[in-house]
Length: 302
Ligand SMILES: NC(=O)c1ccc[n+]([C@@H]2O[C@H](COP(=O)([O-])OP(=O)(O)OC[C@H]3O[C@@H](n4cnc5c(N)ncnc54)[C@H](OP(=O)(O)O)[C@@H]3O)[C@@H](O)[C@H]2O)c1
Image 1: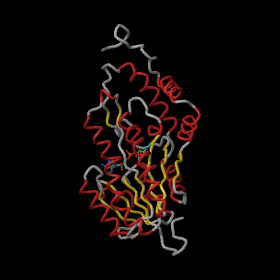
Image 2: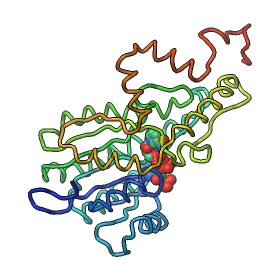
Image 3: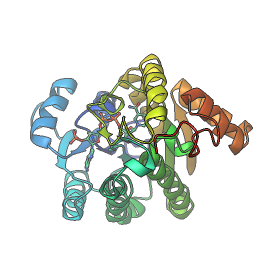
Image 4: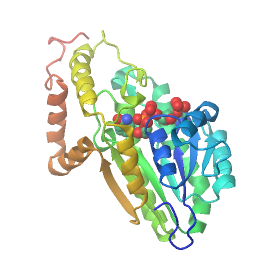
């Protein structure tokens, strides 16, 4: 519901990464459903034009506010929190959607990438949440939504930094849910399926793969199978936005839910299969050689 049933006031929601992809689709959907939307993004000058065109909102529409936010810059996070509270007071919804992805094996990914990944998905979002929680607690109502991924449920080969931060995001959310529930604030972790946005394309991902290196054999089959499967499974971002709108309506203290059939299936597999079984399943699906097959003296390039 986009309005408070007690006061009739419109509810407000902050969405990070609202410039494109799932954030843009979600901001658009929630605006159209009557929410007051605070669209947080790195480049509001360009991003808000796109969002206004998608929603039909005018420049001065108080139901659609753009706020500058770079999650890797602590001063930007502090300034964004102030701008959010100046615009809407305590937000009802806080959707941590912004994210980055990277392809490459652990040995191929530089430490700088791991740091940027943690800054974008954990340190920045945690800092923003800490800034906003005092007013949300005082308001006595709200929902913090963490946009996770199938990689957060189960670590996937060639995306260790991404899987690591999404797993951390989920544990952070579970911990925080136990803390903020007594104040009337719920937490939802969304395990997101595959959606047709930049993040699933080569251009929208930091590519650290060394296609001629030690892991060339892995990349060869993973690239073919992974890309083909992603294209087949990818759904429209609007479908995700519908799921997010529903998730924001929940009154439960903690929810972990899948949006998308592939994510739903993984959650089921994760519940019924032992960890070692999931490891084997992933290995077979991705065409990775069996244990020990590339030991020195075998077919390794090392
Ligand atoms: N699409 C999928 O299949 C899929 C699957 C699982 C999970 N997800 C998750 O869904 C979320 C949205 O992804 P998407 O598919 O919409 O990807 P996307 O199209 O690549 O959009 C990513 C968004 O994050 C923003 N962003 C990146 N770094 C930022 C930073 N330092 N500070 C602030 N904003 C930043 C980007 O802003 P700029 O425009 O400024 O770059 C952009 O708005 C991510 O958390 C992703 O992990 C997506």
